Length: 167
Image 1 (cartoon, helix red, strand yellow):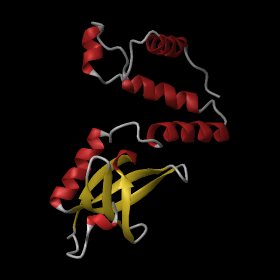
Image 2: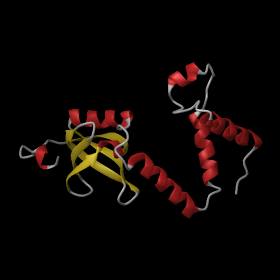
Image 3: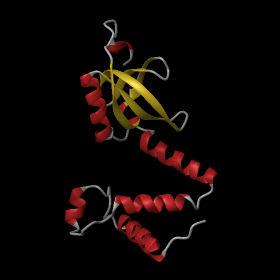
Image 4: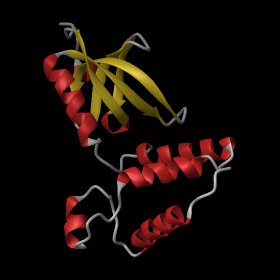
C-alpha cells in the first residue's frame, strides 16, 4: 500500500471541504472558477492522480463494487442528458455515415462494453444502430454512452429500415 503524502492529504481535504460547503458542483465549470475568484478550485489532473492512488489502497472486490455503484448512479436512470462531447461524436458519425467505436454502459450487466455501431437514427434520448458486436439493429440510450470515436469506415442505412419498429 502506497501512503499518501501530506500534500495529497491536504488536497483531499481541500476538495472534500469545498464540495461539502457547496462550492463545487462540477470542477470544469468556468463560472465556478470565476464566481469564487480562485485560480483553480479543483484541478482534474490532481483528482485523477489522487483517485488512482486511492484505488491502490482498496481491495479489488470492494473497488469493483464501488465502481459499479457509481456507474449505476451515473448511467442507470433517465436523470441526465447525454455527455455532450460523446454525443457530438455520435452526431458527427450519423451525419457523415461513418462507423463509431464506443463504450456503452449496460445497467443489467453492470458493465461497460465496447461497441462498433452504424447509426440509423439519432435523438437526444435514443440511438438506433446496427451493432457489430450483436450483429443486429439495436436501440441504445444516448445517455449511456461513455465515450465514442469516429472510424473511417462508411456505411449506408438500408432502405427497408423503419425507425418506428424500434421506438
